[in-house]
Amino acid sequence: MGGNSSEQIYYAKRYWLPLGIAATVLLLVTTYFGWQYQHRLRREFVNQVELLGSETSNRSLNNPGTSSVKHSNASSVDDHSLLSETTVHQI
Image (cartoon, rainbow, N blue to C red; front, top):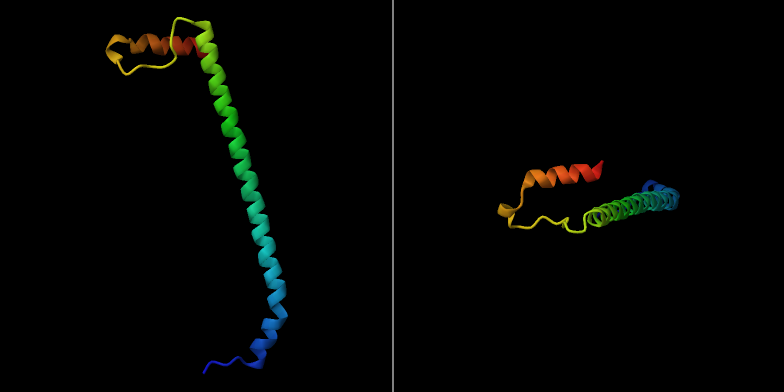
């Protein structure tokens, strides 16, 4: 049915190992750079969360009577005063 010619067998023996090694190295390099990228993004995310947490704790320390969480009962809260308060604390 489908036999291999001697030429096909020759090229398979000649290039199988070098191409397998090249493919393995390519996968290792790609995996390493993907891991480095993911690791950098995770560090940046943690830094941003810590920064956000420190801003929130600073806000509550500066104004102990105020809450940094906006409640769902928006009818009793003036949005303009919250915006100006947030703007002042960011400066």
